[in-house]
Image (cartoon, rainbow, N blue to C red):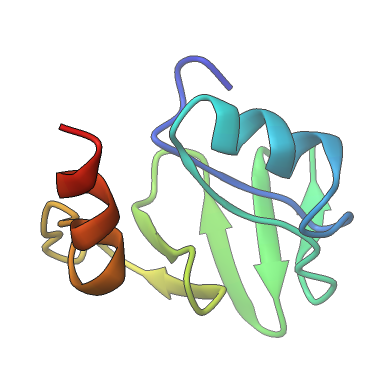
Length: 91
């Protein structure tokens, strides 16, 4: 988990150990993707007919739980709205 950019699991949920630890490390975690079939021997996973091998790029959207095949451009998160107001009050 330390080396990972994000975490994807086939079991568990929002309060699973992987999800809680990932959030504590400031990493995205999409947990409980039941359609993911992990093949440890071949270092890959399948979703339906799609095979993702070790070294392939995937992008995780922690807000929606989407798993996207390939590398998607990312943006830095920003504090806005009520969160920004609360953040400013703490200064």
